[in-house]
Length: 447
Image 1 (cartoon, one colour):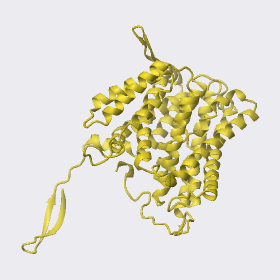
Image 2 (cartoon, helix red, strand yellow):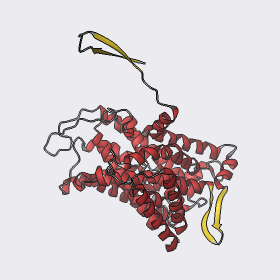
Image 3 (cartoon, one colour):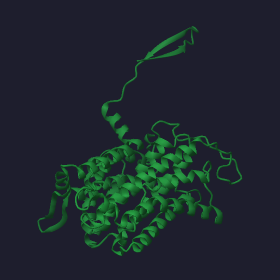
């Protein structure tokens, strides 16, 4: 119940009206909670910590047995479908397709109606994303060769990835008071980074290609795209289409998460059929709780379990050449790539930073870009498999590098937020018109 004071227009007397306020039911409140960036980051951290505990606890054999348990079918009658996977593979190949669908929807909206629609506005963070991938890859390759481990060169793409959920979660918590243009820069950088990571996965981590299954997957994705743009699409039709397209893509040899991205790209990014908002918003809001609340934590639980007890223990794992290669690539390579590319672009081209962003704001952004985690763990699985001599070291390095990058990002965000800002942060000769700041709206991503 609530009270509201008003004036009776006929008598001029002050009236007190009692209004009834409804508390949202548990379901909607749970969905809103799972949709928050801070929630997604917290669940990822909790799942990773739990995985490390289980992988090194007395019951670690149970954890390993669960991860390697086979589930699924290899064929339907005479037709091979190659869906006889371990639980860990189902998490990496299946559940991550949900996450990449959300990434695809977000990318589609940014390209059509968001920060990527204007090359002039998006040019700097887009090119910074390219630099932020190239420098870590170079650092990784040089390091593993210099340390005498050229057999690990296949993991060159591991430190190039940026985890959107983690990076934006840290920014949401520690970046309060900074202009939202900083968030837009990081988001643009991260989504372009993910788009390029998807291209890398499709090109460099596809071993055996079946054109028949690939064609069937593309046809199913086209049907999904047609139906999702129809006047009144139903979820109970979309979900089976999604699953069938994913299964065909997986059987084709192309990593199945690519199907999720492509289907995300088919969602309309502008209002249609008299609707008030674009369907990219609706579908992102509908699927994000499942992505952040279920898919990502489950994937992290099975992907982040590094055994530091058996074999040579932590000392042997951390002494692998891939560990400094990935850690330095994530923490130093991302920072140098983002800041260096931005400096070159703004000095040598007409492109400039958006209003409200200064060079100092890119220091925490560069560190946040070094939080690899989700996609980096996926690429490590694709690079080395589940039982390679480099697998455990790669996972340990991803966790170590991501934690260091997150801590440095949090510290520099608070340092940046406390410093006074000038009228022309981007140094374009025009005073910045900045009215919106991170933290001004509660649960900004929900709206």
